[in-house]
Length: 312
Ligand SMILES: NC(=O)c1ccc[n+]([C@@H]2O[C@H](COP(=O)([O-])OP(=O)(O)OC[C@H]3O[C@@H](n4cnc5c(N)ncnc54)[C@H](OP(=O)(O)O)[C@@H]3O)[C@@H](O)[C@H]2O)c1
Image (cartoon, rainbow, N blue to C red; front, side, top):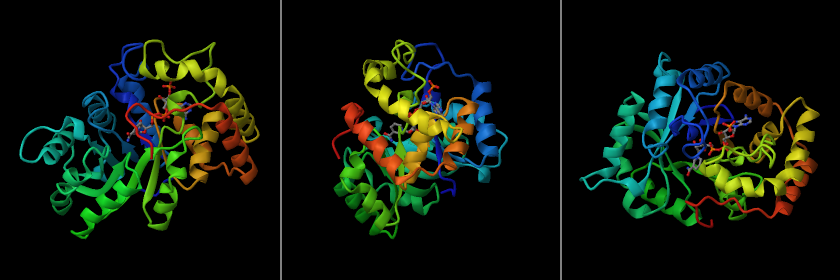
């Protein structure tokens, strides 16, 4: 898939670009996103995660536009089949993949995900012919629990393929995959674990507070603004740990996810964020620091499970 320790997320790239509108409410421009891509590619971060449902195609389109001019072999694409929007044709998985390929301007996806375990037995088998035809190179499952991962792996295994990656919500504030044994399972079975929302959509960067809340009117503001005061002790400590290394609280959050043996997918929206990823890669947190941060995270008593997630 790629050798680097961090992947790039583009959910926010699906916002319309109007202030306060959409899930993130950030104002992103095509030229700004091009700068993000140029810096990331030059820094060796070349695995881009998107999904058709991020702005209903807008994220995939914006990503393709921002990657224009790079050879296909210079970057890897990761996108998703979302069962809830499957059509009623003969092969809804192939149909949605073809539409994604079209928007992405390519004839294969490096990593194709089943976005959630709505019906594992139904949606896993159609991936097999797509793997055989080389339309997808690797398969991953997202938001699946241990039993669902095993079922998908068994179905693919019958055709000599396997689940090669898992993508779940995993941050200092949300460690259900670790508690459910999914991290251990992945380590033992050589399955790459991608952690999403390691920055809790900005809430764990230390850049947002009651005085400087997340963009008004956005979905992430509705989820996080009310709990920002409870995160202060944690983000202050992250900032202090970062400062000793010339890094930020966000870099420490990313470094923590790397230290736990996962590949964070960080939702970069500014070229500067890529500098943070470079710094995060160079941070080796001590066992004491990790334990302290996790204790502070637990003490917040904040549950950041997404509305789309179930208990693991
Ligand atoms: N499979 C799934 O169900 C699922 C669910 C959620 C996410 N994902 C994937 O995981 C990716 C990451 O999650 P996410 O984008 O929701 O949230 P995230 O990575 O936790 O946070 C992203 C936000 O943090 C800020 N940020 C990003 N990099 C930063 C840095 N280095 N320093 C400081 N601030 C930084 C940006 O906010 P500002 O723009 O305000 O600066 C950005 O919008 C998504 O883009 C998507 O690819 C998958």
